[in-house]
Length: 107
Ligand code: FES
Image (cartoon, rainbow, N blue to C red):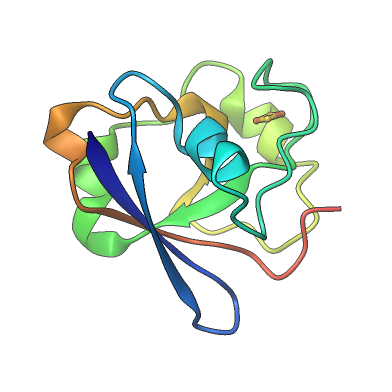
């Protein structure tokens, strides 16, 4: 299992033990974490899975996927250099303990 901490816009932290190989978006949706919608199911067609990777983890999550920049332009909340589509971050053992911050709005 890979532990992920989701930090809501109000500071509430939710820890999830997710299956290796699943995405940060899918782990949130299957564990009822508020703040991630994932409307398109991970097909990179909605931007309702926007998250901000914690600065300490940015190196390990790697660069944005091809096409991710364009889709993030449609995100409902402010974009930063830490913005990612959480459906494009696959959970590997190297990401155990990952912290992601959630935007105020997804829609
Ligand atoms: S779930 Fe739709 S872009 Fe990530």
